[in-house]
Figure 1 (cartoon, rainbow, N blue to C red):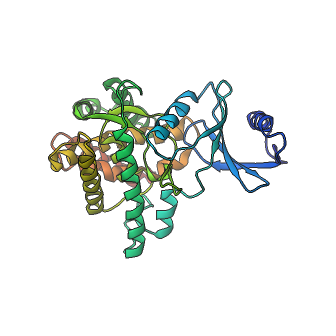
Figure 2 (figure 1 turned 60 degrees about the vertical axis):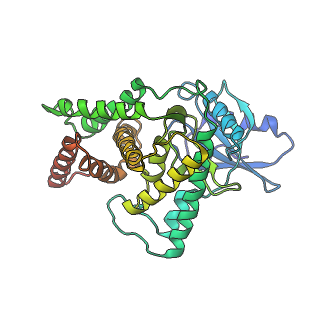
Figure 3 (figure 1 turned 90 degrees about the vertical axis):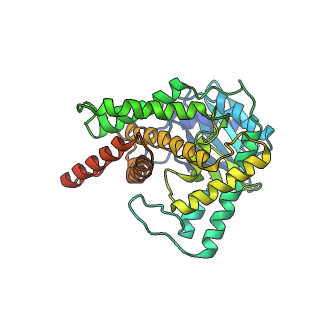
Length: 361
């Protein structure tokens, strides 16, 4: 079980993780390799045993991450009959978990390989292959069914509330990190005056929605092709909150986007299944879709702030390459509804300025 590779810095956490795994597998021979990247401080490794089985190890430094919510939400997903990793071995104090392996291919990787959707933030290329779209429909169909099942299992006062304070903290990431740290314009006169009523509208809309369990990052990158489908990952930040939130994460994703006609079609499919299951979605689809779009706007402003923070605080620049995708999401909603015109004008000004300077926003 190799721990250090010659020529790489010594990794004390990885060494400790391997020693911990070995305690529970004294008679087994195994190897360890990176399994996936993560925007947080967590790391994942795939443990491959000589008998052909695999497990996934999570390394979550306890001073940075808390494993308890992961274990709790995994249990809730299992209780709901959904496919989430099972905890095989745990040391919560040290931030180590050994989990069942849900596979190697995400929904995102499968759809990107098929050439459907728009996986490059500044491209409009989109496959017209009917078979490829049929596969995307099937994957989204599985994701919709699982989401309805997850929401139907909701119980009050089990998960933390997605309340006004949390919604506001998330929105504040946009002026602090994207406009401030990344673009250097947060202090411009009138900017905060424009943002305040926008934030108030988005928070009020989110709080007015029926409340269910919210995965909070329910997107193709966190859904695995598995049996049963989907395998669900990255759920440790789950809360109780707006019913449209996970839907906005799923259909207006950070890493792949779709023509609006497909988004509407898939949203209708969810809405019909949710109504049939007895979930408290609005009886007027038009009103439901507005809430969905406004919820997406809140998320997209937040994510732009998070992606800027990843670059400027955490040294992870790759995420901001998808900023143009979020500009597109935000602009489409800002131009459609009253009260958000200032956001569209702000994006136009940012893009014009950055284009002139040759700077990549």
